[in-house]
Image 1 (tube, rainbow, N blue to C red):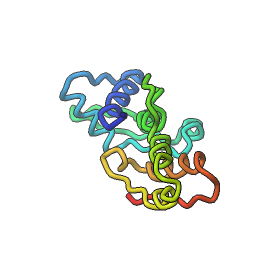
Image 2: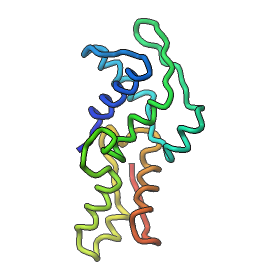
Image 3: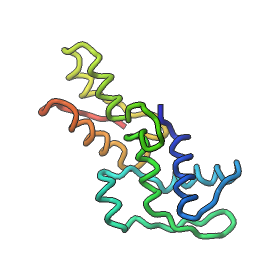
Image 4: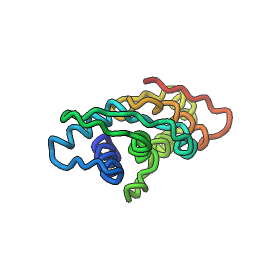
Length: 149
């Protein structure tokens, strides 16, 4: 239930909290561009936040330069934890596990070995690694997982 549009809106909110005000529809397009160019999925968001080495400058079309920090990975966190934005649906890793769990027991092994990522939000750097890590934590030990992007 969470998609790229939600990540864009979350990034817009986080930028507003950081003092970067982008409200109009044309400015929302700028936020989308920032999302596509600078956002990523953190392998461990808590450790990532503590590092404070992820600040990058971004030049807006008007020439103003803004500094992007935690917003770069916090916006994408909603893909794994939709509760951040008040949604009661499962994150992508939980949805994956739940979907495979509904399949016949004999097929589950093969489904975990043939996970295919598609769609814009799966293109964020770090998405596959995080999905693999989150999925491993929620399935029986020793289950092979293969993710194709």
